[in-house]
Amino acid sequence: MNTLFKDVIGIFKFVEELYAGVKKVLVPPKAYSWQTLIYLSVFSWIVSYFAIGYIKDIIAFCGWLFLIAGTAWYTTEDPLRVPGTFMPVGAVITGFLVSVFAFGNQEDIITPRTIVLWPTIAALITAIPEFIEGDDTDAKAQIPKPEDRQRILILLGSSMVLSCWLQFYFVMDNWLQEYPSLQADNFKRSTFVVRTEQPVRIPANGVIILDKLQPLVEDQIAAKPWSVVERWLLDAKPQIDKLSRPIIEKNLVKYEEKRLWVAEPRVVNLRSSSGYILDLLSIWRGPSSNPRGYYLKKSCRVEPVAATNKAGEKITVAEIACLRLSKLIAGSPPPMQ
Image (tube, rainbow, N blue to C red):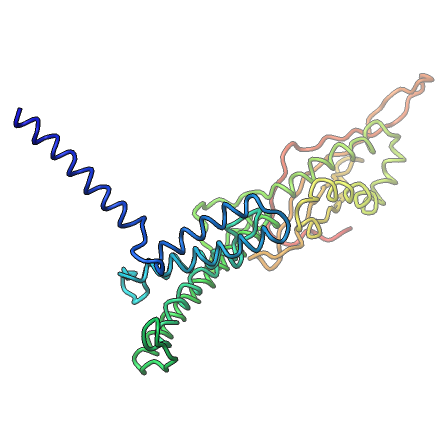
């Protein structure tokens, strides 16, 4: 019985200590405290949910200010430093909140600009107290000591370099989204970009152009009178340009690189027969580690064959056979003949 009574007392003591700990965190010791600011921010967001118009924005704005101030206050009471620096972890948290508040939006709270400016803002928040002397009730501006200025400049410079690298990452990521054919480059000479895979990938957009162009060219040539086809081949460049332009505009509409692709033909007369080799080229005019660029090629063989028309007369028509796959070739395309 005594053991049971002691266990019950122990449970009550545990609950009492737990309640005291929660109360210490949640209940402000005085009206002027960080808990009060946090509660005001929560209250502001709840009220802004039911408000409309510019009143809603004003209340939400105040909620952000209360949250930032309360978080900064709480995290600077007993600051934990980022290893190797004098930057408090609280400044990192506060800097993130300030960056989200200043550069986020309703559709996407965390934006690339939010991430990029986060380190620099955190460094500025860390440096601000070094320029203030005194306490909460009696504070005045001061110029930091020379040794303090040095570490402030090192911290700000390091944070700004980190922001620059983050910005560089987002710029590269945006380039690769808008210009996916850049991924076909191997970046061997790049100081900043390292590719883990060795083989160079064939650019998908260049392949799309040739795959969409091939059936249109076949419709222009297949089973057509040989004399008509020969004239078509002699004047192939404007023909291919006319066929390829809608393909590029339609299939590459969501990419900025659509202006950097052009389709051209190359026609070679076969000396061993009366046929021709028609090479369909999709040429990349964008940046490349190779100064001569690269292009994709799909070869088609055009030959005359005997056929019979509806009247039963024997005529010569064209037959075309194209390779199934496109080849990626580094360098400038061959000159027009």
